[in-house]
Length: 116
Image 1 (cartoon, rainbow, N blue to C red):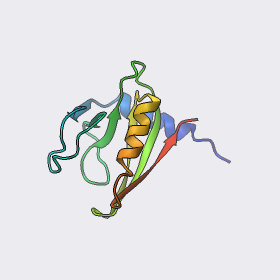
Image 2 (cartoon, rainbow, N blue to C red):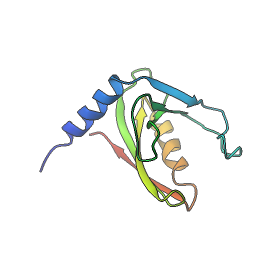
Image 3 (tube, rainbow, N blue to C red):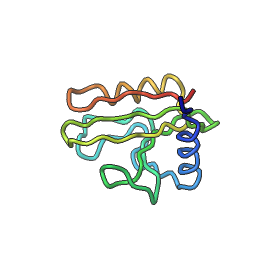
Image 4 (cartoon, rainbow, N blue to C red):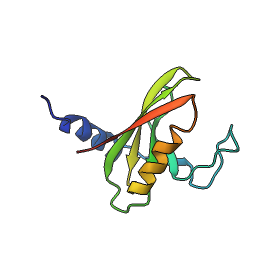
């Protein structure tokens, strides 16, 4: 069985070589869905691309070590796409919030994959 070290090293590399842009800070409302308020900083990696054509999405928590130790794999039934979101420096409580966020509706489901 292959190890996942190469995968996580690749994520470390792309994050370290990219500027993190927080365009939806904690406490702000979603631009199209004002009832949805972000409970963890959310943004993207500048000069990267994801399945939706935007930059690779990131959730950035309050842990000062800013380690990458999890990703969310998402299936969005409304947009009919899937993608990953990288969690950077998220505490266990923040990881729970991110996971809940991506599973609150029937239109989006996600799983949290932890780095071992």
